[in-house]
Length: 156
Image (cartoon, rainbow, N blue to C red; front, side, top):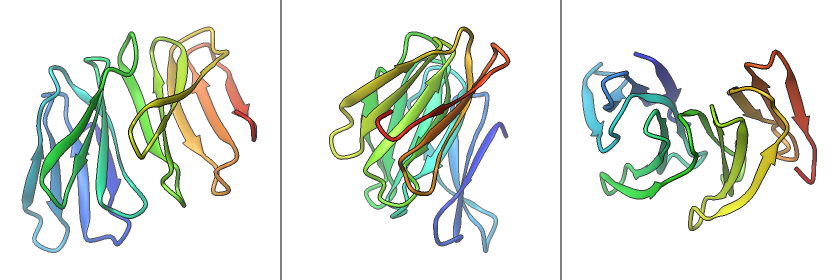
């Protein structure tokens, strides 16, 4: 298991693996109830949307996939970056946008409605290793292989 995320109500856990298949687990039974398939390479990151309806995965194949767990299908395949996607996160309260970080040294902000690109943030001189979004959804923080962290502020 490489990446992990709790469903907002705590009843499910999504995991990623280096074999390119993610899984959704029922916490009570401990059983896998759904496979997140479609990535060509390892899945490095996973996150549930705040409403719990969607799961986003970031992969070594440079893409992000968004799955609908109600319909048990992939909603969108986003050719997100020019290198592996190291992190994917939904905005924590509204879920209105999703942020991805990549080894291509960029952070990208995507609409959660149609998964269109809203903005690209550049500033790291090395691979982006991690990202997070503040509770207010007005700030993003990132860290990179360049040994720096960056705070992206309300206008991103």
